[in-house]
View 1: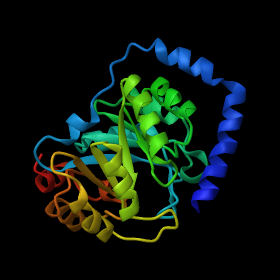
View 2: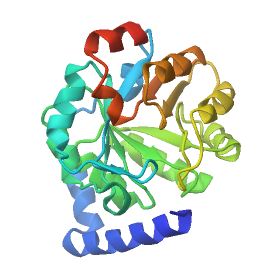
View 3: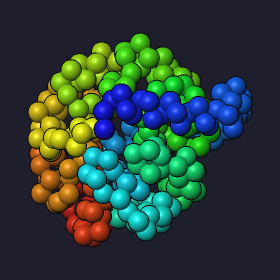
View 4: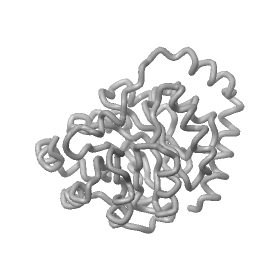
Length: 256
């Protein structure tokens, strides 16, 4: 998949959603919210390596799909294993996600919920707040610096936090210019290329005091140890790791 394909597919999806619910209606609903979002940054900055549990039906990066996917059960299982946050993919076209996944996970989540979607319009940010997300991912691959700034302001106004995702050095430069303090390094490109070494390459650029997150191509205990040794504050492992590593082992690795 390419950036152009992602944007085109997302625009088509949003056009259909706006027929059912207008942006004005979403904005009004968001203005009446009383829930206080949980802080993702606080959850990720305690001592040791924080772990983010992925709640994803499919991944276009690894080409894997879970036919028996149950988002609520996945969230419950990962919480029992001691994750510090949950990342819920809602994109329909490439992740097989649905917006309702966030609400279903939110019912059982005792940790912050990070909404993962290809955000290109503020409509999606109002929707994220109404769904119960605590934080939202923004991508320089899809947004210029001005839009990132505007969307960040809206995210904060709605009480949520923003995470900026990067895959290249050029995107890291934009992330640093944005002033956002949680930077997630995606190890695999939209075309599936890349490896865990992307984290090793980009992580040193993240200033001390910020939160460096690694995700993608983390499928073993050794991978987690590598990410931690390179200085990351958090990691989002592949779903398969949670099927093989017990809670005690995970806690021993991460020091939490």
